[in-house]
Image (cartoon, rainbow, N blue to C red):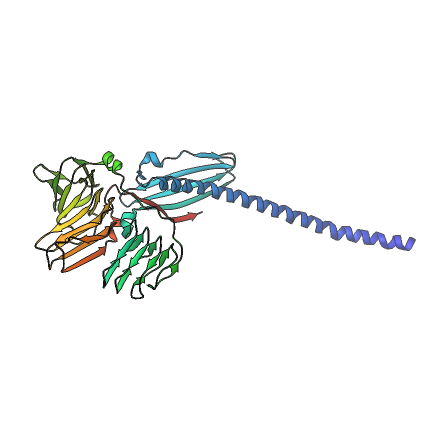
Length: 407
C-alpha cells in the first residue's frame, strides 16, 4: 500500500507537470481560434456593409432604364446605419462616357469614427443601351428568307427565328432566341447561341450552344420621357436637314445649333422627313396616332466625321411610334445610326432599280421592300460598335457592374 502511494505521488506530479501546460495550450489555441473566427465574421460584416451600396445602386438603376443615372441628387446617399455598423458612399459620375465610380466603405462597430473593422470597395458601373448593344432586336417571331447574307453584331429575337435562306452567317456576338431556332447547316453562327425553345434546328454553331435564355428586358420607346426632356419640339409635318457645321434646319422655318452635350428633337403627333450630315449627338423621336408618328429618311443620313460609324462628336438615333421608311430614288442610300420603331410594321425600303441601300447602325425591325421599287444593286446591314461608346442622348440604359475590388 505504501509502495503504491509512493508511486502514485510522482505520477500525479508528472501528470500535473505535463497536463497543465497542455491544457493551457489547448485553451489558448481555442481562444485564438474563437477570436479569429469572431474577427472574420466582423470583417465579413464590414464587406457586406460595403457591398450594400453597390447592390442598392444596381437595384435602383435596373428599375428605370430612362432615369438620369448621373444626376447628383439621384446618386447621393447619406451614411447608412445598420445593426452592426455603417456604410459610407462616395460617387463620381462620368456622364460623357456613361460610367459611375463608386467608393463604398463598410464600417463594423458602434462608432462610425472609430470602427473595429473597415473594408473599402471600389467599383465601376457602366451603362449601355440595348438599342446600341444589339445589331438586330426583334420583339416577335422573325423569318430570314434571304440567302448569301451576313448579319453583324449581337442578335436578339424575342420569339422564334426561322432561317429559310441558304448560306446565312451571323458574326460578332451571341445570338439570343427566346423561342426555337430553325435552319439548315449552311446557317452559321460565329459565336455562342442561347435559345429558350425546344430546338435549335440544324444550324452550325462555332461557339457554345446553350438551351436556356438569359433574363433580358426588351426596351420600349417611352414617348413621355422624350415629351418631357426634348430640347426642340416640332408639332407639324416637317423636313429636317442636318448640316455638317453642327446645326440642323427645319425646312421653311429655322436653323438650330446642336449643343455640345447633344440634342433631343421631339416631333409630337406629326411625321418627319430627315436627311443630311450629322455633326453632334442627336436623338429624333416622333410620336403620333393613326398615320402620324412616321419618320422617312429621304436622303443620305451620315456623319460629319467622314465615316459611317459614330464617334465622340457624331451619333444619331431615330425613334418612331409608327413606321420608319428609307426612301431615295436615282442613287444609292446610306443611313447611319440607331433605328427603333414601336409599330408592328417592318421598316420600308424604297429606291431605284440597280441602286444600293446601306444601313450602318442598329435596328429593331426587319426591312420590307416596296412592291414597286427596290435597291436591287445590294442591301447591306452593318453593325456600328461605336454607338455603345458614343451613344445619342436620352436612350434607355442598362447597368453593368464591370469592376469590383475590395480592400
